Length: 329
Image 1 (tube, rainbow, N blue to C red):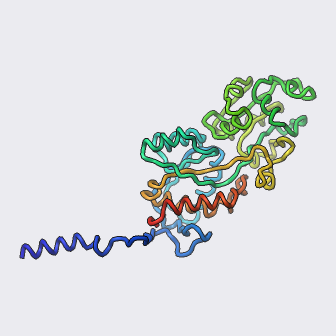
Image 2: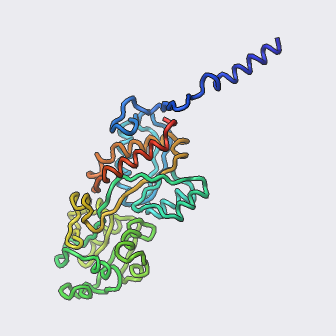
Image 3: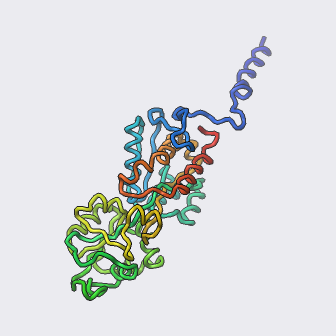
């Protein structure tokens, strides 16, 4: 009898392996997966069936877009908690790659090699998802009537060695230039420095009357306060405040959906979110949110004030999700 009981127990313990094991090539069905795909690539998501917290941080430029997607995710039934911090791309990568505190990093620049190495040291392999395009906006106070356009060379002077507007163009006022720019943790700062100063930060950081903040709303308020102020940030913040600010054309080109799509606007740049395949597999809520993000981003992005990514880039992001999650949904 004892031998029979042991044999029965062994069979019982083995049965999940014999009969419940996932067949090779067979996809697991997550509770939140809909029967039908919305876009023909990614599985559909039912937010009502997604559970668990999601932690994301990074770019202040990406923040309003991620915030809008998170709000839609909740409106459609997600009852969990999404932590979304606007701290700059660099600080966001620090939390994701070094501290390992977040599930998703928002970024207005590509991840750097040293950040990838940091992530690998804590067992993470950053996975890039292109979500849209920003036209970096260079803006002045609404009362400013003397500048409508700037060349890249003029921008280089306006944000570095020139002390007065007339130092850049003799027809402009002999008044001090008041500068408001993103902080050094910002991907917007990195992008501007790369495009205008070939990555040399010393020029811009040595400018007079320079005020920096990781909060783009602080920059907006500063530029509003002086007719001789100038600054730059993501296009969405101009859109939200265009009754108070004027945007400059750059090299004679105004940022529009056409000039951004064609790549003719000189300060157009990609926007990203980053995660990791293991995080997505261990935390299905993160995978579901990224799926939802990529599925609906083009329905929301223009409302926020940015521009859709090239269709090829967005498709590549969706295929990266599929590659990371095959067999786990």
